[in-house]
Length: 161
Image 1 (tube, rainbow, N blue to C red):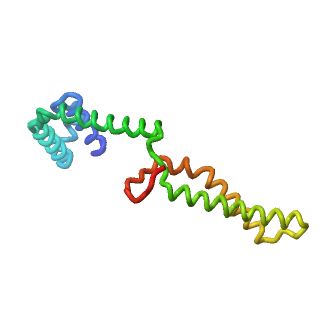
Image 2: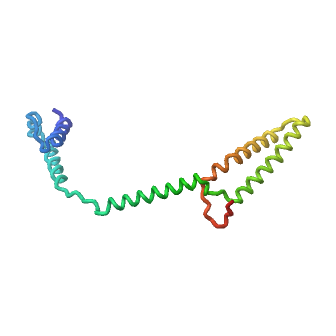
Image 3: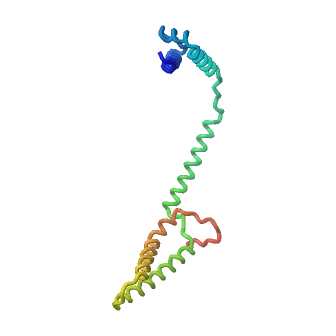
């Protein structure tokens, strides 16, 4: 019998029966193999020492502390969720001014591009890039309030609307 197989049987014996009662074949191998005998003795000693360890008792106020911490976390999460639903978070005024400037510049670019195209002038690469920028600006203007809504602006210098 191989030592690895015997080691597994030793561990199984200690885990299932609690004290390491071995069958005849395992006992014979342990008597002949010093390495397996040492393994069985070390495993028995470790199992005994671990069993003798004291189990630490939890602190008396552990349950109360855990419940109060969970309660405070739930209350803060509920407050954030209700603030987001009621629209209490506002976008700063300077952000709206920037959006307005982007809208005006996009409209100006679009008018120029479409007037050139209407006059029959060929569409150059610059015009294509300008159209791409216009579309990109329009998409950002459309999505930016949604993206900025969850942000908090706590600085008093930022005017809120």
